[in-house]
Length: 539
Image (tube, rainbow, N blue to C red):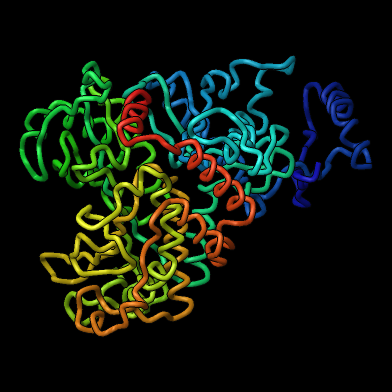
């Protein structure tokens, strides 16, 4: 075998010179070692050097053995904690979690299958257990289990889910089940699928580190609305749990048990919460997740947190809706993202935030300015990925706390890009993207925004004047960029954005645009009330 290396250093067999059974022992040893002598063509002598093991200096532990041992230890530990099933999960292009549950006993070698010997399942590790049809990842819309021809996908190709054990969590709301998120790979070649959005984010993070020397910090705010589980109006519209407004204590008081239970279940999954407060609409809450130095961990936390919010709401006799717009008269549900970065090539402070200016309070560094301008430059196309539905665009406009043009501001909650100031230090800490909601795939969304910012840094773009400033007012109003008025228009911007299309790749762009256009057609003539009723039934 290629994996076996025989050392040249000796392991010595000795035949005692004197023994009560010397003749018998010598004969026995000769007979026992004869096959070995034949293999290595060794002469038959009483003292022989036989190379059978590596020396300590030549030996090293196999990484594959380490990984296998760690995964088995981890799976045995969660089985001891009462877990019976492991869900292998991936998020598709339309933001649906696609998963399959495998019994832990099968993974740990308790059962064979398809006529193979027992333990054969685990021969290739965790990467061989779950496959998903490629068309299920980027060929099915969110409204039906039907293939969209314009995606160019069919049912013939299969992807394997390669789990990331760093994302494995026991689900507190389904305590006999754990879930692990993974990347999607071609079943035949093993290559990362161009349709895998989690893999796309991995590649963007690695490019930022290797090509730019930058590492990103990302945070998220998740907004949702709580409705009674068993109460609807005569027109089937759901009834919110209260009529509170922004920052009021009503929701916090009345839903304390839900909030406390939700907090506990998130903590059990190592998902840290920084803040909870009532938002502007009836029954609306915002959960602020702690920022992460690894954008992938933040994205995973968002996926897990939304699942937990839905499940805990059900346990408390409610339904949680993440639908961006629920009432024409009230603010909608966003999922704002916060971005900053660290300059890993900095001699003095490679671990420090490189977004703020080093000496000027509440100002942005030159790299931070280029990062912002890159996002603004691509914003008309980016919104097709960050607010990707007809309902999402009902939430955009003046007075909707989202912004309605391509602009930025300092602590301006009506600007699409809001530079946040630390109240203690008065330094700019990060930029918040408000044009984002929970209908979007979080991996795709973060990957696209980071790429746009990196493009601004690579091109050395100069940040445009802040909205409302004298410099901005002096600019020709005809040069001011407007956001797309509709979701369909935003897809046209995406098709024309060569940079973003190159980052996403031809296959993913083709599938994404085809699916979203199918959803636009499906929602034609559907009222806001119908959208709410449909979302409520699915919650």
